[in-house]
Image 1 (tube, rainbow, N blue to C red):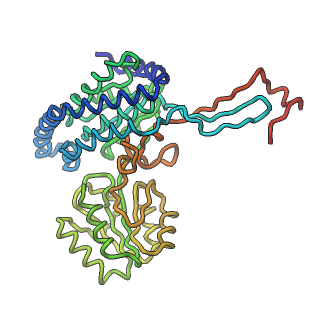
Image 2: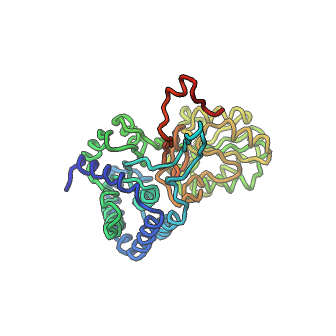
Image 3: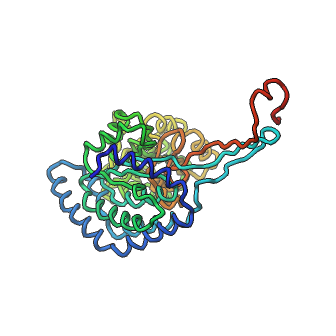
Length: 415
């Protein structure tokens, strides 16, 4: 087995070779991966059952959380979405080598801004074995090399999914074998984070402690989010039936997801009417309701929600910007002016009107898949799909031109 420095070096070389890949080759590879994953469904699900059984013991011993345990489970629905995501990526437009704009800056001199891959991605994630196929498919389509490190709790599932994909990739003589890589130990992660000469971007997917550790222990740019503290504000002009339906979906459809709602803010005019209906509906769905908290910056990751009365929309916006994580926040209202105000002033990657926060997902956005959700305010924000894994370069075309001619006034730039 190569050490991490060797793996990173070979991945760097592969990222250069991958620049030559055509859209046709990449799409054909993704189609083959899609078919291989479908054909090996039983093997993958059986491997996941082993991981789930081992995780039950860890859960009972208090070594992993319930939300992490739930994210580990690869059921029929998750498997369907996992393989469909690979196929969807193959159908999307190739984001590489697209001319963003082109202009003549002087006679005979043309400047172009053109998309290109980031290079080598380091993806570190906990549980969620479906992440492997999502990230690899996006990396292939964007011509990036990738080094993956999954959590030990999903080791069996991770290995079989990766090996199925790697076998397909290795059957292509024109695709660099080291374009995708899987590492295993915590020691590997520590070394990976030190290789800023080889790795261009780190994307963590996991607990707050994992993301915090990564950000504090690397010079490599990190894309992602540590918290998923999502809010729903029930405005005084809300449709009650919509509000109830959306709140229950946002909390109960998948409570451990980072885009599930953690705090619901209710306008004071609804305190004696709608609020009791909302509490009743939450309790009916086995959701624990917390009120009058000292700390509103809590991510539960389970069937628990915080409720708070807001004086008005301005107080709701201030609360969200103070205690939220910049992930996804929603207003329920029939008042367009309030909706636009909320969506303008709430500083989050996703701002919604009358729709569940659970829609904050690359697959649901039509990105095919995602490598994660970013709360960063530079480069990529929100669900990160193909565009988030590309950057751009400037290409300048001339014909023996020199700056001195422009400095001395012999030639002039176009205005």
